[in-house]
Length: 421
Image 1 (cartoon, rainbow, N blue to C red):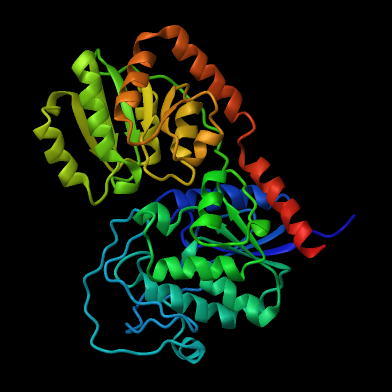
Image 2 (image 1 turned 45 degrees about the vertical axis):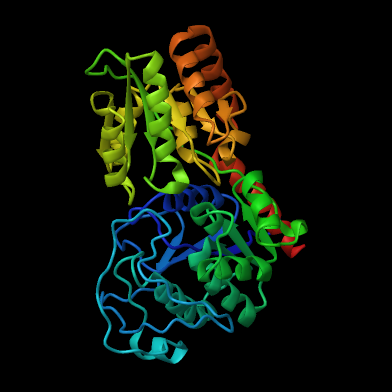
């Protein structure tokens, strides 16, 4: 029997320190991968009290003090620090000013160590660079066969480690700058993503939709691009009684342009024009929340439209247990894990064709994100036609049966074997 491959997995957020779907996906995949490989997860920051069934290390020192530095120099690339960047949902914004500039290097790390307080915020670009320099020192202490880097925050660290060890590099793309900023997206985050994927031996997008973006928008050789769909943790679904008699349609996600919350307002307006016995709930928070509240009031949706703000997992599940239809009108959605979670609760979905999860939920009703008329029609049909609703729900149960993290991990472990063969 051959030995297990040793995989050094580089992540940015990880439970219990998470801001969004990235940490949940990294955790789910790590748990499953640990059955197939000898796994070591390295993070900028972790909870020392958390227990896992595999090794998890943090590069951040015990002293949570910020290294005073604003200069951002990534290898030979012209990356420019972008103030206030927060590519994943986070309320962690910073407003500190720095009086000193310093080039953070391996030598700086040896003198001061690597310390990080907030995973995202104004200085995230600098912290990403410092993490890569710290890993150039610490990474040489680890024994591994393969480097696996998750999303742009860890790509540079993975590239640096590949250069000094010669070990193959796998980069995992959960969400891209294309998704966050549109087809014209460029800038330093785009440069990091492109550089990481070019240097990688294997690129794993979370959907064929994202794989197309990797090839066409980033110019990456399609021969090293292999899609592995995300999985979903099994949940004990349940049903709860609503406190109101109307049917409920749910939007769950960050309130950013990428997720299409403004289209959800349009959809709600169109549904209510023909079916007033419906309530719409928008769960989540983000930079568009104030604008959306004002827009909803302007459209006269106040009495039928509710904003919950941030909800923890327990409250999300409670909300799902009362939902009649799930709606995901994302403009560009690499995957869309929340749609799988809704399906586990027996909720029929209306989802954007511009999403990776549309490849999994074959029976879901779909429309282009901009076609709010068709999405509204789909929602009305699901609310009024029990036969259609039952059909969509059953199809979803069939579709998600094989959509597990174990399935994803088995595919990835096979790709690892191909790399070292």
